[in-house]
Image (cartoon, rainbow, N blue to C red):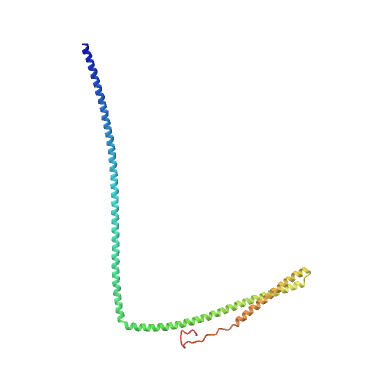
Length: 255
């Protein structure tokens, strides 16, 4: 009976141990299941975030490509418009040039027809024009030669008048200098005669000697100016060259 009871107790303990082991295994299995679930959830979240980022990058790339495509299409459209305007302007310029060329050709043909009709009259007019031009050129040439001769004569007269005026001014200045020196010399001579002591006499005598030298120099200058004026007044006129012109020649410079 005791053995049976002991066996029953051992069986109960064994059952309890089995139940505990089952519970532990179930807990471990549950932990493992939760860990797998968390891992799967984390992986799912990461995969979702990665896929979301990939979709965002893909959408951004698509938007960028669409914008670039739109810009290229806009540039192509603008370039086509510009090319169209250039072609239009070129066509208009060519048309205008052809029209102008045709108009010029017609005008030239009309001018040639007029020239052919009036050829004899034109030849006569040209002959008359040439004769008139030669005559006018001869008259103008003679007038120019006469004007040059008169200008040269007037220039020489003006130079002579200027030279005479300069000589007269120099002569007047020299005369005034001589007069002033003489007056100073007279005053110094009077002062020398009225001097009271030898020191004043010596000083006045030195000033008088200097004044006499200045008077002599002024007189020499006056004689020099007078001599220049006399030689200038006595300067003979240049002889004119012999005239070999044909009588009545309007271009003759001997007039």
